[in-house]
Amino acid sequence: MHITRRHLLALTAGTAAAGAIGAGGLVISWWNQPADQPYRHLTSSESAFVRAWSSTAFPATKLISLDGSSANLDRFFDEMLGAMPGDTDKLLRLLLNGLNNLPLTSHATPFHKLPKAAQAELFDNWSHSNVSAFRSAIQSLTLLLGMGWSTHPDVSPFMEKMHSCGYGR
Image (cartoon, rainbow, N blue to C red):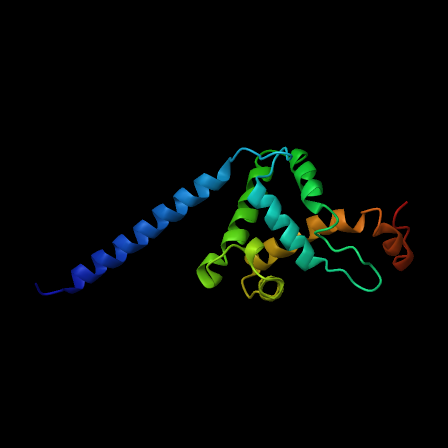
């Protein structure tokens, strides 16, 4: 059989269609998953990602020994999802699943199972991405979790000292 340009175009279109269908099916499977105990909105893999992301975004320092994972930001995020309007909670959960599974293509494992060094490298790369929408999503998630970390009882006294604008009032 002689392969023609039409055969190659058909193969390319078929591959793209199969990829789109697969990606669509994956997104649908993430869209409205029931929560796992003890959470009201998160699954266990979503909460594991939130803990890993929080640990990477807010590492312990000499001044503040509490890292993001130890601050139970998965519980904070779970409660915050309950206050979200419309489908915002589902969209945020979709973001969590997408980011957690993105390293499957490069590291063959989800973000929350990667070694700390690999998590930190991905976090840094993603936070400085040239794709503005992706970078904004990363920064927005980090900001939302930062609200929980900075108001944690073990962290907020340090924040109050660092900011003379009345933090903590």
